[in-house]
Image 1 (cartoon, rainbow, N blue to C red):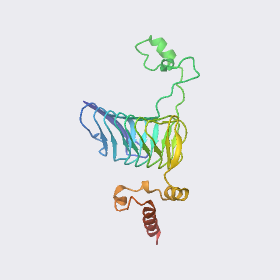
Image 2 (image 1 turned 30 degrees about the vertical axis):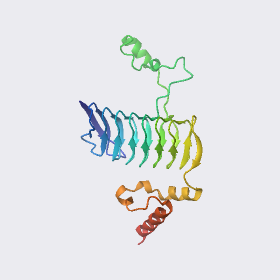
Image 3 (image 1 turned 45 degrees about the horizontal axis):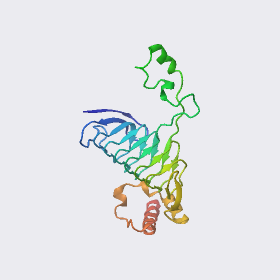
Image 4 (image 1 turned 180 degrees about the vertical axis):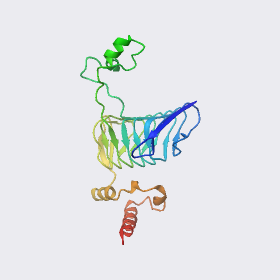
Amino acid sequence: MMSMSATGGSEFPRAVTFANDSFYTQTPPDCDRLSVGALAQALFSTFEGPNVIDRMGCINRSRIGGYSNLGFGSYIADSIVGRYCNFGARVSIGGYEHPQNWLGITAYQWGKSTESLVSAATQVLLETHPPPCQMTTVIGSDVWIGDNTVVKRGVTIGSGAIIGAGSVVTKDVPPFAVVIGVPARVLRFRFEPILRQQLLAERWWEMELEELADLPFHSVVECLKILSMRSMQGKSP
């Protein structure tokens, strides 16, 4: 059994809610560039496409750029994700953060999931308490996040970054940084500073795969030369 609804979105065609309750990969009827694996869900989210949510994954209240995919059993909430990102298995991004300075840590304090536990009058009273403010997590383009990684809410991960498996990311990550650990720390950068600047300026990830297919991917320098030439030709009168 599957459930699905769609409403218009400002940047991508529509916001989708689609629960795949089957053991087979499904495509939402009104979002044909989204592939949803067995027992996976897309909830109140927008997808540029093409995108993949692997088995038992969930994307909730988020905006996902083209060619970005979520691995097995992974979860994204309240996040903005760029293009050409890949997230491994059992990754958690933007998980809900419970209050540390309230009387308690439970969501019962603002009436979440308490309807069957208290009277109607008490439920109304609990709902007068606003839930804690939750920050948005922002992930750039061309970001790889390894298996079993946790990315805390409100973190910004720059384009081109790599997050090592099993890391806990509690602070912002610079573009093209390779980070690992608990808490995650910068191990090194993928490229020298000047190359990083050129990549950020070129923004190749804004192109479609069809436009990139003939590039010599193994040589970043050669790719940048070709892209720069194409850009100059495109600007010629």
